Length: 221
Image (cartoon, rainbow, N blue to C red; front, side, top):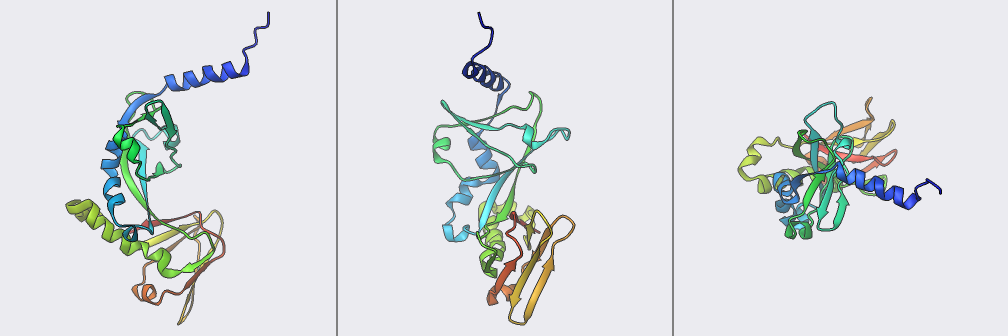
């Protein structure tokens, strides 16, 4: 008699072992409340269409990576992974069904391990390597206005956003083709270009060109 376990059965055993290592961590509704996702979503689209809201979840134990968290949203029999990047961020879009069903977030972190919760903000990037200045840098005034409406009194403790950090995976260059002459910015050692908001440029709205499409655009102080 063969002692080999059929592949499908072996996969099932592995899945059971993975699920057994998980534990209930947090209601989805709680995460929504912490990052004010419902209030952000309630803003008119024209007041948030340039901004990306991320949940930022980082293990308190510094020997652990956010990638170790293994987050899954469990809604009845439905299981949806909530992947985090290396910085502990997950792009968030409000899911009304999870809210209505009181879905739970499960984690594979060992019992007793905790995670800090917060949020990060990004600017929506066009799919091309050219765009008008205001289409991306306009995310800064939009963000500051949204923070004031969403955070209320707590907005006093949130710094005013002033820059967009364009992140590339190799050396790159960003050029603002202003009426007064081109303004060129080379990426730093991290392959980042920090562009501070210029109100005059926002009004002029010149063309912006990059040598390659950025991986992302982070909104920063």
